[in-house]
Image (cartoon, rainbow, N blue to C red):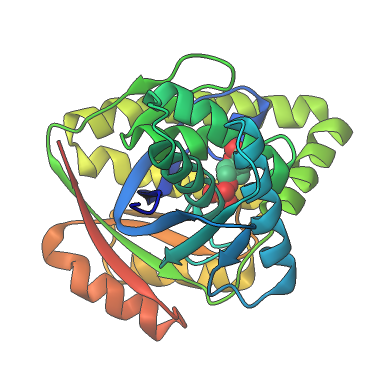
Length: 302
Ligand code: PMV
C-alpha cells in the first residue's frame, strides 16, 4: 500500500504600504516574497506529530494549535506526521504564521484529495491566523494563499495588482522580532485615546496608499519611494518603530534608497527599501553597516 502523503509550499510576503492602518479600514498593499517559504509535508500516521526546527516552546505550542485547527477545518483525525521546513524567520513580519497555516492546510488537503480553490485555502488560512494573531486584517493569508500582489481592504474582495516595471527592494532585519499582536493592540489604544488625531493619520494613510498603488502599477519607483518613506513616518508616529529600525531607515536613505520603511507589524523585524537596481549593493551595505543582521534583495516584476 502506498503511503498517504501531501506536500505544499507557501511563500513569504512583505507589506509594501498601509500596514496597521489596514486594521482600521484603509487599504494596504502586500507582495508575495517567493524566495523564502514554508514547505509542509504530511504523512498518514497513528498519531499527530509535528517536526519543525522551531526551538521556542511558545512558537511550537502555537504551531501545534494551528495544526489541530487545520485538521479540524478539513474534518480529519489527528493521525498525521507533519514535517515543516521553513526559511521564513518567525516574528519578523515576513508572513511565517500565514505561510505555515496555508501550507499545512494545503498539504493535508492534497493528501486527502480535497481540492481547494485559492479562495477556500485563504478562508482556512485566515481562520488559522486568528489562532496566532487574534483578529488580524487578513492581508497576510490573502497574499500568501493567492500568491499574488494584492491591494487589500479588510472585509472586501481583494484586487490583484501588477507592476508595469521592475522594482528592486532591499529588505534588512534589525535582528530581533516584534509581536504583531502587541503592536496592533498598541495602535488600537492610540486610536481609542485620540480618535480625531488617529482619524487624520488614517485619512493620510488612505490617500498615500492609493497613490502608492498607482505608482506601483506604473512601475514608477521615483514616485513610490517618497510615499514609502512618508508611510514609515506615519508608522513611527503610532509607535511601532524602534531605534534600531530608525537606524536602518536612515542608513537606507544615506545609501541612496528612493524610499524606506519598516514592513509588517514593526517593533522589530525588517525594513524595506526601494532602490534603483544599480544602488542595491550600496543600500544593502549601508544597512549592514547600520546593524542589519540579514539582508535580502528582491526584484518585483509583472
Ligand atoms: O504579520 P505582520 O507583522 O506582517 O503584520 C501584519 C500587518 C498588520 O497590519 C500589522 C496587522 C494586520 O492584521 O493587518
